Length: 144
Image (cartoon, rainbow, N blue to C red; front, side, top):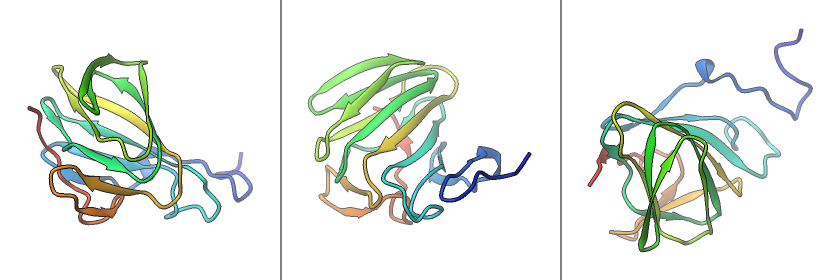
């Protein structure tokens, strides 16, 4: 069998992808994006959260869907919070502040899909905007 499908299709094996350490036990594994595909219309990956960690409240310039793969999460979307477990998913329109954090014991993993190729993150607290998965896009922290 071949190692890869005929381009532009991709096969992503997470154990061969360099993880992006966001700090404090939050690690992202990028799957599909402008870094490995010239024609993608979505950006995808997986993020793993250690117990009691999350990312700060933020928004994106594109829509985002998140599927909880493992563990117990809290999704903060706008002014509301929701408890999620593995198999449950969210969709957040562009520009809506949101965040996810691990509310359980053990690891929480999410699979995320952005509806675009050029994704940015804007921090709600500061208004700072930067490119998704750039050196500025770290910010893993303890959950509230």
